[in-house]
Image (cartoon, rainbow, N blue to C red; front, side):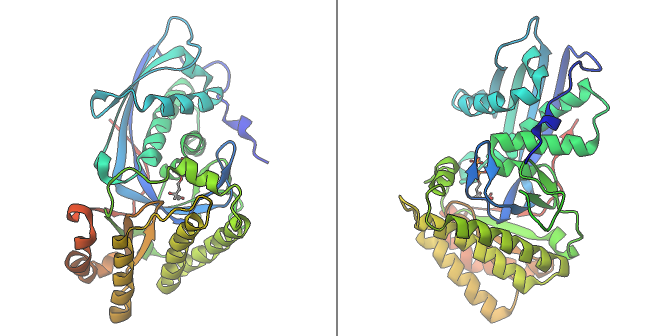
Length: 363
Ligand code: DP6
């Protein structure tokens, strides 16, 4: 049972603030063990594990101005890339509705939100994880300004908790490099309510891992995550999938603690294909890979068989391919990617990223 009451901001603020402005950048993340299936309110059906990224991120500034009298809902204006964005309003309004009970002080302020991403909007890369995380962090910064005694642990946990209520995977975009969201037997402090940084030491090779994102399809997602998660509700294989994910998570942590790259590769690819298998076998069914996604996968397998190098792939709920590999193999693997794989990308576009260490406040 969750105790979400711990996240309700306590009564009277210790200090009074008329005007404040905070900027945070929050990274995107790539799941190694996938979250696919949830219950209200945004609780995962299985634990998930992700690498935090470093280059793909959202930068958000929120300016708070105290109102003369409290506003019933949350008073906000949103600018994306300097342009006022009405189309993003409903999602943010729903987010505020969900989190307002935990941040009652928010009703006393008018918010102007400026947000931008370091990756192109039409890249097929979802910005909900980094976007919700950056917004949650700006709000937490106001809470911290009102109550300066908040601990760092509480700050991060509540930021993750709030971000989760906006988008499940956003809970994993606060810290890094390896983050767990969802209760899992192996890690006693894990929780369905928020994500935590993996406390156990992982082999150093993973903290400099590369992620090259091949943009096979830059269009709108064919299946939104909301629809996707719903497809798991009556899915005939759902229970087996949730059990499999939790088991894979345990095995993956073993592999990452011992630096077993072969096992890491096996489990990461198994997770990606299992996620897509769930979508191929739901009703209605979806095929989110494109012919070029499959071509890339086959080339990777062939390359591995030929070279014994440690290049592997993972997939989100779409056609783009994340290529994961250790930094010390960059030279040969980059040459192979440039030579053989870029032709499968839309306009040869890709994003170079690597494992990162979490969100940070900007001056
Ligand atoms: C396939 O976090 O986008 O990327 O909670 O509805 O916002 P909501 O879903 P979202 O789902 C992410 C699904 C995934 C796997 C993952 O990141 O774990």
